[in-house]
Amino acid sequence: MVASIYQSGLTNLPMGELQKLVHQVGQTPMQALHLSVAGKTHTVHLKLEGYNPTGSMKDRTGYSLIQHLEDRGLLSEGSTIIESTSGNLGVALAFQCKARGYRFIAVIDPKTTEENIAKMEALDASIEMVYEPDTSGGFLLSRLARVQELCSQHQNYTWTDQYSSSANPHIHYSCTGPEVYQQMDEQVDAVFVPVSTGGTLSGIGRFFREVSPATRIIGVDAHGSVIFGTPPAPRKLTGIGSSRRSHFISADLYDSHMLVHDEEAFAFCRELYRATDIHVGGSSGASLAACVRYLASHPEDTRVACVCADSGRNYASSIYNDAWLQQHNITLTAEHLGPLESIAKAN
Ligand SMILES: Cc1ncc(COP(=O)(O)O)c(C=O)c1O
Image 1 (cartoon, rainbow, N blue to C red):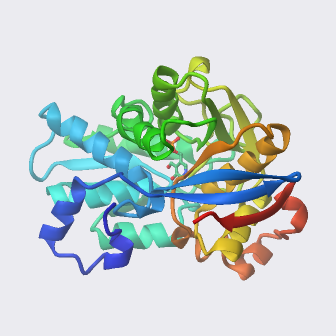
Image 2: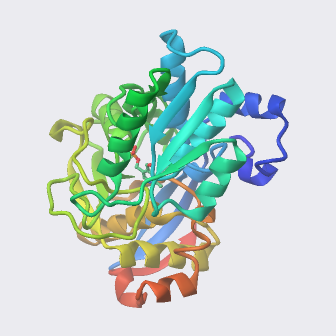
């Protein structure tokens, strides 16, 4: 486990330190929790991806996308990388690019958290904001159209393409999945994985299908996202969800999916923080909400993992801010915690 850039301070790190951290993504800790659900106590293991260098699981993806291009000789000093991102991948790529001597342009949208924009800027990324939502009410298609436009105007731009590069699922197949499996002593009943591009679900799913086919792989998505074929609708959750289907997910790689409302995800983030001091982001709250609902109908499952894709630090101005919740007419109640009775750290 590495010292996160958060702890060291983004702007204070000398170049030598940044360069060292580039190759130190992953090996994040697992935190065991006792969750009481419908009269039974389960041990649930949180894979805390906020401990990656820039604070999210997307450090793995960013590393893999850039390494893949470098390995194929497609980058040289001073190359310009461009990517569409709702935030976390933008921070991860900004970090990788700064440390490796590339310029980086992040095409983002108004839902990108102010915390992530500040981090990208501190890592010298150029920010390109799209303001027009696409036909599904999300911003992905608008961001992608802007990436295409900029690439056609600048032949020297290289698009990392997190949406279809095999380097995205591959890093989760070769690293994230094996870490979860080993940290749980190779006994895993179910894994809950938040989904956007589907790289994480696809990579973890493929790994577990090979080594432990009985482990149930459950994709967690936001209500209003179209990834699993449900109709589009507005949503506040960021990181998770998409306005189009994933290139990476196929039915053989996962067992089921669960959709979570914004309020449920936010309520779980805040309850986890209140009860344990563990500070996670919205998609992690969604994974936990899905996990608790699932455990109520699967009391036999005792060894369960939830992928917590980022830390709560990204959401100080939103999920963890009462004024922001009020401004968006969001009232969180005990009902949003569903069948959860209590949460406590197991160690
Ligand atoms: C916080 C968060 N959770 C979940 C995801 C989904 O990961 P993937 O794109 O691999 O499906 C992302 C992706 O950006 C994310 O930032």
